[in-house]
Image (cartoon, rainbow, N blue to C red; front, top):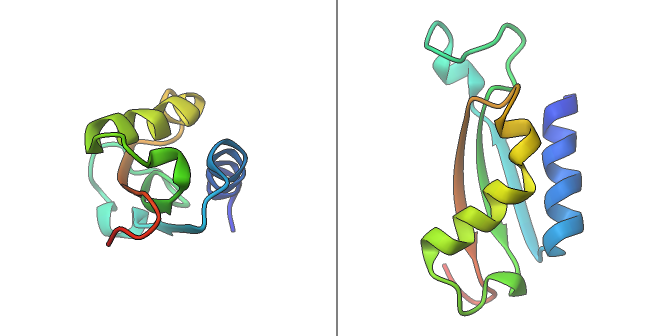
Amino acid sequence: MGAILDAIQDKLTTAFQPTRLEIVDESDRHAGHAGAREGGESHFNVTIESAAFAGAARVARQRMVYHVLAEELAGPLHALSVKALAPGEG
């Protein structure tokens, strides 16, 4: 794993204690596009399931994740796709 992926995993685990956390580096699919960095770790897809999302709307859940990863989004992370679920959902 790379440093950015590790940071994403650590921060999301600490903030949400997820029952499911999948992080996929999709940077290779964006090579040559804006924001793509040599060596990858610029575009990620995250699926996270946590009780912390229960009762929150989809956009609110995404904002919760973006808030936790604000430092990465302000720097090396160019794109982040988030699927945030409460336990028992999809």
